[in-house]
Image (cartoon, rainbow, N blue to C red; front, side):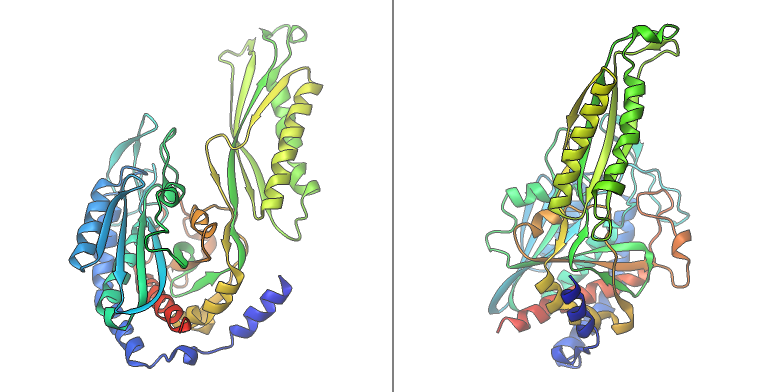
Length: 436
């Protein structure tokens, strides 16, 4: 890693002359990006006002598909339920490059004061909920639609093919359904034509607008959810000695899981997280129940760490329960598993000058590992990929005071969208130029 970082630091001093910033093609990209900015913002506001949850992005996908067809692209719909794929073929031979945007909103009731705030009510896993684009997927779609327009305008200069992937259910499909990037890969989105590399971005509400952050290697964590069922023996709450108390055993398990991170993991190399997010047991104050159920999440930045943490959780939970006279059943994953979002180091190094060209050397920086997860990782398991972060926080705001993702107050500064379009276009054109 040290060698890679030194190489990247050296590259960060390179200006974009390698890719001829002032060439007619780059000038046209900049001009067309300026022209499409207002439309990108309009698309984003429309998507924001009408969010749809995973595997239900029907209105969203129709808008996208209709627009891509208007550009003359070959369009496939119904991919992984509601996904849309557009194919733009340049006039010259070259690599197939994929660009990806996610489409789904979240079951969050919006609280922002913007005039296009969502008022949508829907159902999620059988419950009535609000719906909100509380993670920026509305901006991702709008940016990729703008990118499709600009690249279509320079089609005669493209040396290869661009595949635009609009993906549903990044936040996860409804319980019991398949969806997201994993299903798109299964249905062949990286084939016909076969994708050589893939690029993706994520807007960030706590990174200042105009800035880009990136990381080679493990960038976002692998995620597994887990279920732990502790079984004991019921008794009257007044006579606990007649029970095998699954609630006490569960409390001991929760405490005993935490040293896995502080004592079994080399925290100087990679972070990891073990969190119990819910625990349910019993229905009266004076009855010790027969069992308790816990649900939690596991995050790790490498396959080896992921394997070790899972093995230790199973060992700790079962042995702790056994010491209390109870039993523990551990299911990992219970319903969700995303691999590590892994930026191919060679590709990251190769494309870093493009990020600098797009945002400026002072606006591109190395990012610490992120313990959040992204199913972009399923594409990166099949082809080299680069996933970077785009600033969406108003200039001068304190990042610690900016509302985080997945919250009712989540807010994005729309002035950063133009940089997203420009960067995607530059990544495509520059990668194609390298493949002479």
